Length: 155
Length: 209
Image 1 (cartoon, rainbow over the protein chains, first blue to last red):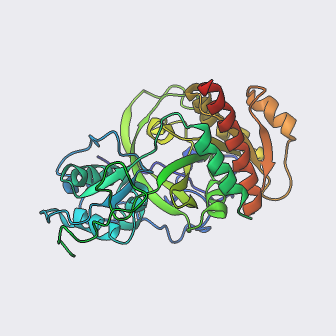
Image 2: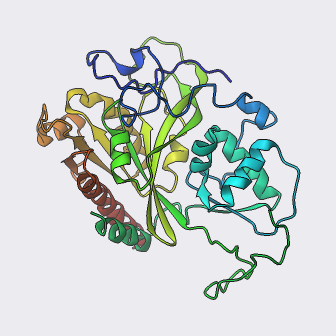
Protein backbone atom coordinates (compact mmCIF):
# COMPACT_ATOMS: atom_id res chain seq x y z
CA UNK A 1 0.00 0.00 0.00
CA UNK A 2 1.50 3.28 -1.01
CA UNK A 3 0.42 6.82 -0.74
CA UNK A 4 1.29 8.53 -3.94
CA UNK A 5 -0.04 11.99 -4.16
CA UNK A 6 -3.08 11.55 -6.33
CA UNK A 7 -3.45 15.30 -6.64
CA UNK A 8 -6.89 14.71 -5.40
CA UNK A 9 -9.25 17.62 -5.57
CA UNK A 10 -6.93 20.56 -5.62
CA UNK A 11 -9.53 23.26 -5.35
CA UNK A 12 -7.63 26.48 -5.97
CA UNK A 13 -9.38 28.12 -8.87
CA UNK A 14 -6.21 29.89 -9.82
CA UNK A 15 -5.19 27.48 -12.54
CA UNK A 16 -8.23 26.91 -14.64
CA UNK A 17 -6.42 25.86 -17.75
CA UNK A 18 -4.65 22.85 -16.36
CA UNK A 19 -6.29 19.49 -16.05
CA UNK A 20 -6.77 19.15 -12.32
CA UNK A 21 -5.05 15.84 -11.95
CA UNK A 22 -2.03 17.24 -13.70
CA UNK A 23 -1.67 19.83 -11.00
CA UNK A 24 0.56 19.06 -8.12
CA UNK A 25 0.33 20.61 -4.75
CA UNK A 26 -0.79 19.89 -1.25
CA UNK A 27 -3.42 17.26 -1.02
CA UNK A 28 -6.42 18.14 0.95
CA UNK A 29 -9.95 17.10 1.32
CA UNK A 30 -12.43 17.32 -1.47
CA UNK A 31 -14.10 20.61 -1.95
CA UNK A 32 -14.75 23.88 -0.38
CA UNK A 33 -15.53 23.89 3.29
CA UNK A 34 -11.87 24.35 4.09
CA UNK A 35 -11.50 27.02 1.47
CA UNK A 36 -7.81 27.51 1.73
CA UNK A 37 -7.02 23.92 2.37
CA UNK A 38 -4.88 24.99 5.26
CA UNK A 39 -6.48 22.69 7.74
CA UNK A 40 -7.26 19.45 6.06
CA UNK A 41 -9.51 17.52 8.42
CA UNK A 42 -7.61 14.35 7.84
CA UNK A 43 -3.89 14.57 7.52
CA UNK A 44 -2.57 12.27 4.88
CA UNK A 45 -0.67 9.38 6.34
CA UNK A 46 -0.53 10.96 9.74
CA UNK A 47 -3.93 10.19 11.10
CA UNK A 48 -2.56 7.02 12.58
CA UNK A 49 0.82 6.06 13.75
CA UNK A 50 0.18 2.62 12.36
CA UNK A 51 -0.16 1.79 8.73
CA UNK A 52 -3.66 0.58 7.89
CA UNK A 53 -2.65 -2.99 7.21
CA UNK A 54 -1.12 -3.23 10.66
CA UNK A 55 -4.43 -2.34 12.25
CA UNK A 56 -6.21 -4.93 10.18
CA UNK A 57 -3.55 -7.58 10.72
CA UNK A 58 -2.59 -7.60 7.10
CA UNK A 59 -6.07 -7.82 5.64
CA UNK A 60 -6.89 -5.49 2.82
CA UNK A 61 -10.16 -7.06 1.83
CA UNK A 62 -13.40 -6.18 3.58
CA UNK A 63 -14.68 -9.72 3.53
CA UNK A 64 -18.17 -8.75 4.61
CA UNK A 65 -19.99 -7.49 1.54
CA UNK A 66 -22.94 -6.41 3.68
CA UNK A 67 -20.94 -3.58 5.17
CA UNK A 68 -21.09 -0.49 3.04
CA UNK A 69 -20.01 3.02 3.90
CA UNK A 70 -23.53 4.06 4.86
CA UNK A 71 -24.24 0.92 6.89
CA UNK A 72 -25.50 1.75 10.37
CA UNK A 73 -23.67 0.07 13.21
CA UNK A 74 -25.22 -0.50 16.64
CA UNK A 75 -23.64 -2.03 19.73
CA UNK A 76 -25.31 -5.17 20.93
CA UNK A 77 -26.27 -4.42 24.51
CA UNK A 78 -24.81 -6.81 27.01
CA UNK A 79 -22.45 -8.55 24.63
CA UNK A 80 -19.69 -10.25 26.58
CA UNK A 81 -16.40 -8.40 26.66
CA UNK A 82 -13.85 -9.51 24.14
CA UNK A 83 -10.26 -8.74 23.49
CA UNK A 84 -9.90 -6.28 20.69
CA UNK A 85 -7.34 -3.88 19.41
CA UNK A 86 -7.48 -0.28 20.63
CA UNK A 87 -8.94 0.82 17.31
CA UNK A 88 -11.70 -1.71 17.53
CA UNK A 89 -12.45 -0.74 21.11
CA UNK A 90 -12.57 2.88 20.05
CA UNK A 91 -15.27 1.96 17.56
CA UNK A 92 -17.32 0.29 20.29
CA UNK A 93 -16.88 3.30 22.55
CA UNK A 94 -18.05 5.62 19.79
CA UNK A 95 -21.11 3.48 19.13
CA UNK A 96 -22.24 3.55 22.74
CA UNK A 97 -23.45 7.11 22.15
CA UNK A 98 -25.67 6.29 19.21
CA UNK A 99 -25.74 4.13 16.11
CA UNK A 100 -23.72 5.66 13.30
CA UNK A 101 -22.54 4.71 9.86
CA UNK A 102 -19.26 3.13 8.91
CA UNK A 103 -18.35 6.34 7.10
CA UNK A 104 -18.93 8.38 10.28
CA UNK A 105 -16.80 5.96 12.28
CA UNK A 106 -14.09 6.38 9.68
CA UNK A 107 -14.29 10.16 9.77
CA UNK A 108 -14.45 10.51 13.54
CA UNK A 109 -11.70 8.05 14.33
CA UNK A 110 -9.67 9.05 11.31
CA UNK A 111 -9.36 5.54 10.16
CA UNK A 112 -9.48 4.59 6.53
CA UNK A 113 -12.88 3.54 5.32
CA UNK A 114 -11.58 0.14 4.28
CA UNK A 115 -10.03 -0.39 7.69
CA UNK A 116 -13.30 0.48 9.40
CA UNK A 117 -15.20 -1.93 7.21
CA UNK A 118 -12.85 -4.72 8.22
CA UNK A 119 -12.95 -3.89 11.91
CA UNK A 120 -16.73 -3.54 11.94
CA UNK A 121 -16.83 -6.92 10.21
CA UNK A 122 -14.73 -8.34 13.04
CA UNK A 123 -17.05 -6.87 15.64
CA UNK A 124 -20.06 -8.21 13.86
CA UNK A 125 -18.55 -11.68 13.61
CA UNK A 126 -17.85 -11.52 17.35
CA UNK A 127 -21.44 -10.58 18.08
CA UNK A 128 -20.55 -7.17 19.44
CA UNK A 129 -22.43 -5.09 16.91
CA UNK A 130 -25.47 -5.27 14.72
CA UNK A 131 -25.55 -3.69 11.32
CA UNK A 132 -28.34 -2.14 9.32
CA UNK A 133 -27.57 -1.61 5.69
CA UNK A 134 -29.57 -0.32 2.77
CA UNK A 135 -32.66 -2.47 2.57
CA UNK A 136 -32.84 -3.11 -1.14
CA UNK A 137 -30.26 -2.74 -3.84
CA UNK A 138 -33.06 -1.38 -5.96
CA UNK A 139 -34.75 1.32 -3.90
CA UNK A 140 -38.48 0.93 -3.46
CA UNK A 141 -40.90 3.76 -4.30
CA UNK A 142 -42.21 3.93 -0.76
CA UNK A 143 -38.79 4.75 0.70
CA UNK A 144 -38.11 7.32 -2.01
CA UNK A 145 -41.43 8.97 -1.26
CA UNK A 146 -40.48 9.24 2.39
CA UNK A 147 -37.18 10.89 1.48
CA UNK A 148 -39.01 13.29 -0.83
CA UNK A 149 -41.46 14.22 1.90
CA UNK A 150 -38.62 14.63 4.37
CA UNK A 151 -36.66 16.89 2.04
CA UNK A 152 -39.70 18.97 1.17
CA UNK A 153 -40.28 19.67 4.83
CA UNK A 154 -36.93 21.39 5.28
CA UNK A 155 -36.40 24.96 4.30
CA UNK B 1 -19.42 -0.27 30.52
CA UNK B 2 -22.18 -2.43 31.79
CA UNK B 3 -22.02 -6.04 30.85
CA UNK B 4 -25.06 -7.20 32.69
CA UNK B 5 -26.84 -9.15 29.99
CA UNK B 6 -30.24 -8.24 31.32
CA UNK B 7 -29.55 -4.54 31.11
CA UNK B 8 -30.89 -2.56 28.17
CA UNK B 9 -32.76 -5.55 26.94
CA UNK B 10 -36.03 -3.73 26.94
CA UNK B 11 -37.82 -4.80 23.84
CA UNK B 12 -39.76 -1.93 22.36
CA UNK B 13 -43.47 -2.45 22.21
CA UNK B 14 -43.57 -2.05 18.47
CA UNK B 15 -40.79 -4.50 17.75
CA UNK B 16 -42.49 -7.78 17.15
CA UNK B 17 -40.20 -9.75 14.85
CA UNK B 18 -36.80 -10.82 16.02
CA UNK B 19 -37.58 -10.42 19.70
CA UNK B 20 -34.18 -9.41 20.96
CA UNK B 21 -33.90 -6.15 19.11
CA UNK B 22 -31.26 -3.80 20.48
CA UNK B 23 -32.50 -1.02 22.68
CA UNK B 24 -31.65 1.52 20.00
CA UNK B 25 -32.84 0.39 16.65
CA UNK B 26 -30.61 1.78 13.96
CA UNK B 27 -32.31 3.78 11.24
CA UNK B 28 -32.27 2.46 7.71
CA UNK B 29 -29.76 4.37 5.59
CA UNK B 30 -30.32 5.62 2.07
CA UNK B 31 -27.82 7.53 -0.02
CA UNK B 32 -27.48 10.00 -2.83
CA UNK B 33 -24.21 10.56 -4.64
CA UNK B 34 -22.92 14.01 -5.50
CA UNK B 35 -20.26 13.67 -8.16
CA UNK B 36 -18.33 15.92 -10.45
CA UNK B 37 -14.95 17.36 -11.23
CA UNK B 38 -12.59 19.26 -9.02
CA UNK B 39 -13.75 22.24 -7.06
CA UNK B 40 -17.12 22.39 -8.77
CA UNK B 41 -18.92 22.69 -5.45
CA UNK B 42 -19.53 19.13 -4.34
CA UNK B 43 -18.58 19.76 -0.74
CA UNK B 44 -20.48 23.03 -0.72
CA UNK B 45 -23.50 21.11 -1.94
CA UNK B 46 -23.11 18.46 0.73
CA UNK B 47 -22.53 21.07 3.41
CA UNK B 48 -25.56 23.12 2.42
CA UNK B 49 -27.99 20.27 2.96
CA UNK B 50 -26.32 18.26 5.70
CA UNK B 51 -27.40 18.63 9.30
CA UNK B 52 -23.83 18.07 10.46
CA UNK B 53 -20.80 19.77 9.01
CA UNK B 54 -19.49 17.57 6.27
CA UNK B 55 -17.20 14.81 7.41
CA UNK B 56 -14.32 13.47 5.46
CA UNK B 57 -13.46 9.85 5.12
CA UNK B 58 -10.47 8.45 3.40
CA UNK B 59 -10.80 5.49 1.19
CA UNK B 60 -8.28 3.30 -0.45
CA UNK B 61 -8.97 2.73 -4.03
CA UNK B 62 -7.47 1.16 -7.00
CA UNK B 63 -6.70 3.65 -9.66
CA UNK B 64 -6.60 2.19 -13.07
CA UNK B 65 -4.92 4.02 -15.84
CA UNK B 66 -7.67 3.56 -18.33
CA UNK B 67 -9.97 6.08 -19.81
CA UNK B 68 -10.05 9.01 -22.08
CA UNK B 69 -7.49 11.19 -20.47
CA UNK B 70 -4.26 9.29 -20.42
CA UNK B 71 -3.38 8.46 -23.95
CA UNK B 72 -0.10 6.69 -24.27
CA UNK B 73 0.24 5.89 -20.63
CA UNK B 74 0.86 2.29 -19.71
CA UNK B 75 -2.00 0.60 -17.95
CA UNK B 76 -1.04 0.17 -14.35
CA UNK B 77 -2.90 -0.46 -11.17
CA UNK B 78 -1.92 1.28 -8.02
CA UNK B 79 -3.61 1.82 -4.75
CA UNK B 80 -4.18 5.33 -3.71
CA UNK B 81 -6.04 7.25 -1.08
CA UNK B 82 -8.77 9.71 -1.80
CA UNK B 83 -10.83 11.87 0.46
CA UNK B 84 -14.58 11.73 0.28
CA UNK B 85 -16.91 14.20 1.96
CA UNK B 86 -20.31 13.29 3.16
CA UNK B 87 -23.23 14.68 5.07
CA UNK B 88 -26.30 13.34 6.81
CA UNK B 89 -29.93 14.30 6.86
CA UNK B 90 -32.28 12.59 9.28
CA UNK B 91 -35.53 12.06 7.46
CA UNK B 92 -37.25 10.54 10.47
CA UNK B 93 -36.53 8.18 13.33
CA UNK B 94 -36.11 5.26 11.03
CA UNK B 95 -34.63 6.77 7.89
CA UNK B 96 -31.35 8.56 7.40
CA UNK B 97 -30.18 10.11 4.16
CA UNK B 98 -26.46 10.12 3.42
CA UNK B 99 -25.05 12.39 0.78
CA UNK B 100 -21.66 11.35 -0.49
CA UNK B 101 -19.58 13.83 -2.42
CA UNK B 102 -17.15 11.93 -4.53
CA UNK B 103 -14.27 13.01 -6.69
CA UNK B 104 -14.82 12.15 -10.28
CA UNK B 105 -11.39 11.61 -11.69
CA UNK B 106 -11.29 9.31 -14.63
CA UNK B 107 -8.37 7.55 -13.11
CA UNK B 108 -10.33 6.58 -10.06
CA UNK B 109 -12.94 4.45 -11.65
CA UNK B 110 -12.44 2.91 -8.25
CA UNK B 111 -14.89 1.73 -5.76
CA UNK B 112 -17.68 3.48 -7.53
CA UNK B 113 -19.39 0.16 -7.66
CA UNK B 114 -19.43 0.13 -3.86
CA UNK B 115 -20.46 3.72 -3.70
CA UNK B 116 -23.31 3.38 -6.13
CA UNK B 117 -24.65 0.09 -4.79
CA UNK B 118 -28.11 0.76 -3.43
CA UNK B 119 -27.91 4.51 -4.06
CA UNK B 120 -31.16 6.29 -4.86
CA UNK B 121 -29.59 8.47 -7.49
CA UNK B 122 -26.87 10.97 -8.24
CA UNK B 123 -26.38 14.65 -8.80
CA UNK B 124 -23.60 15.41 -11.24
CA UNK B 125 -22.28 18.87 -10.46
CA UNK B 126 -21.05 20.86 -13.42
CA UNK B 127 -19.04 24.02 -13.68
CA UNK B 128 -19.70 25.52 -17.10
CA UNK B 129 -16.11 26.65 -17.33
CA UNK B 130 -14.93 23.08 -17.18
CA UNK B 131 -17.75 21.00 -18.49
CA UNK B 132 -15.64 18.03 -19.48
CA UNK B 133 -14.63 17.41 -15.87
CA UNK B 134 -17.94 15.72 -15.32
CA UNK B 135 -17.77 13.32 -18.25
CA UNK B 136 -16.42 10.39 -16.23
CA UNK B 137 -19.25 10.66 -13.74
CA UNK B 138 -21.89 10.93 -16.46
CA UNK B 139 -20.37 7.97 -18.28
CA UNK B 140 -20.34 5.90 -15.16
CA UNK B 141 -23.90 6.61 -14.09
CA UNK B 142 -25.21 5.98 -17.60
CA UNK B 143 -23.50 2.62 -17.69
CA UNK B 144 -24.56 1.72 -14.16
CA UNK B 145 -28.16 2.65 -14.90
CA UNK B 146 -28.31 4.91 -11.87
CA UNK B 147 -30.83 7.74 -12.14
CA UNK B 148 -28.94 11.01 -12.27
CA UNK B 149 -29.44 14.70 -12.81
CA UNK B 150 -26.95 17.17 -14.21
CA UNK B 151 -26.80 20.19 -11.91
CA UNK B 152 -25.02 23.24 -13.20
CA UNK B 153 -23.66 25.10 -10.22
CA UNK B 154 -24.17 28.81 -10.77
CA UNK B 155 -21.62 29.78 -8.18
CA UNK B 156 -21.20 33.31 -9.32
CA UNK B 157 -24.64 33.74 -10.69
CA UNK B 158 -23.36 33.50 -14.21
CA UNK B 159 -23.02 30.59 -16.51
CA UNK B 160 -20.64 30.48 -19.42
CA UNK B 161 -23.13 28.35 -21.34
CA UNK B 162 -26.85 27.92 -21.29
CA UNK B 163 -28.46 24.74 -20.02
CA UNK B 164 -29.27 23.76 -23.59
CA UNK B 165 -25.64 24.11 -24.55
CA UNK B 166 -24.59 22.03 -21.55
CA UNK B 167 -27.08 19.37 -22.53
CA UNK B 168 -25.74 19.41 -26.04
CA UNK B 169 -22.15 19.12 -24.82
CA UNK B 170 -22.94 16.24 -22.51
CA UNK B 171 -25.20 14.48 -24.98
CA UNK B 172 -27.24 12.98 -22.17
CA UNK B 173 -30.49 11.24 -22.87
CA UNK B 174 -33.63 13.31 -23.24
CA UNK B 175 -35.02 12.15 -19.93
CA UNK B 176 -31.97 13.20 -17.93
CA UNK B 177 -32.78 16.59 -16.40
CA UNK B 178 -30.19 19.34 -16.82
CA UNK B 179 -30.85 21.96 -14.20
CA UNK B 180 -29.09 24.90 -12.63
CA UNK B 181 -28.77 25.42 -8.91
CA UNK B 182 -26.66 27.28 -6.40
CA UNK B 183 -24.64 25.02 -4.15
CA UNK B 184 -24.41 27.72 -1.49
CA UNK B 185 -28.08 27.77 -0.70
CA UNK B 186 -29.87 25.05 1.15
CA UNK B 187 -33.19 25.51 -0.60
CA UNK B 188 -31.49 25.37 -3.97
CA UNK B 189 -29.63 22.17 -3.12
CA UNK B 190 -32.81 20.70 -1.69
CA UNK B 191 -34.64 21.39 -4.95
CA UNK B 192 -31.81 19.85 -6.95
CA UNK B 193 -31.94 16.72 -4.80
CA UNK B 194 -35.71 16.60 -5.20
CA UNK B 195 -35.21 16.43 -8.97
CA UNK B 196 -32.82 13.53 -8.40
CA UNK B 197 -35.40 11.81 -6.22
CA UNK B 198 -38.07 12.37 -8.85
CA UNK B 199 -35.89 10.50 -11.31
CA UNK B 200 -35.27 7.80 -8.73
CA UNK B 201 -38.98 7.46 -8.10
CA UNK B 202 -39.74 7.18 -11.82
CA UNK B 203 -37.23 4.40 -12.15
CA UNK B 204 -38.36 2.59 -9.02
CA UNK B 205 -41.98 2.64 -10.17
CA UNK B 206 -40.99 1.35 -13.60
CA UNK B 207 -38.96 -1.45 -12.04
CA UNK B 208 -41.85 -2.47 -9.88
CA UNK B 209 -44.43 -2.73 -12.61
